[in-house]
Picture 1 (cartoon, rainbow, N blue to C red):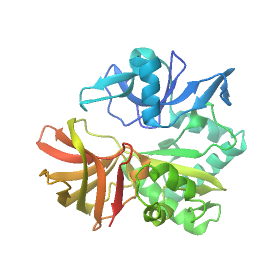
Picture 2 (cartoon, one colour):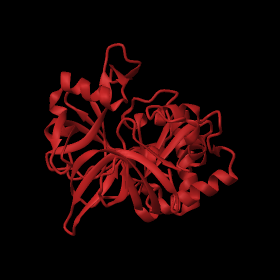
Picture 3 (cartoon, helix red, strand yellow):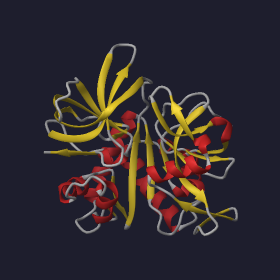
Length: 327
């Protein structure tokens, strides 16, 4: 078992039978940042090797579940200054890699969903000139817990690869009817699941979500693509939850996971004075959210970041109620 490298979208099965989705690319030798996604449950409708599972998504609910039942998976993450869901490497029973699973599917697609995945990846690979080895498939199909209604979750590895696939996807949607954007009707469940906890009128998000390239429909099946880039390790510490307004000066990294938007002319509600220079999120819903030149409003956790060069401040978005909107 290779414990040397974990990437966003990898899955971990623990000896307790829990399935976790890996978050980010920065981990320690004995701890992997990951969030709980599937729990064994005798009444679950998903079945793997004779065992029933349910899918869980709400981060607050799964954190409570782990505290009550499996406290080994709530740990202090020293380099972030936070207590988070995470998997001790000693508890890992199996690692699932999206790139490996995709190659299995491309070699022998056995179901309707697998054929849709193969068609989509082959079209993107041909249009972008990026070899299929730079793609991966994550989500339920990666671990064998998919249902007939499962979505298509793809990864693309590398910055230059990500830019090329993004452009190819935009062109593909313009030319081919079988790959399409969401419309006002089909976007509704996306709006509710992504932004329903913000307390903001969902109409403010509707057109933004419809315009996004990285999610949409493939032959009527929902797809989402993460363009993954590696991170430089840093040490950070949270300060407080804040709401800010600012101007976006560089959104070029806003299509990636993690997404980053460079900002200036920052005003923090409540009068706090920090030189916040960027917005960052590991949540896919924040990709493609705003653009260079936009005046924005955002809510998240203000962090102090310490690296080898200097101390800086950023806003991390991804908690319950966090948002990012152009104003």
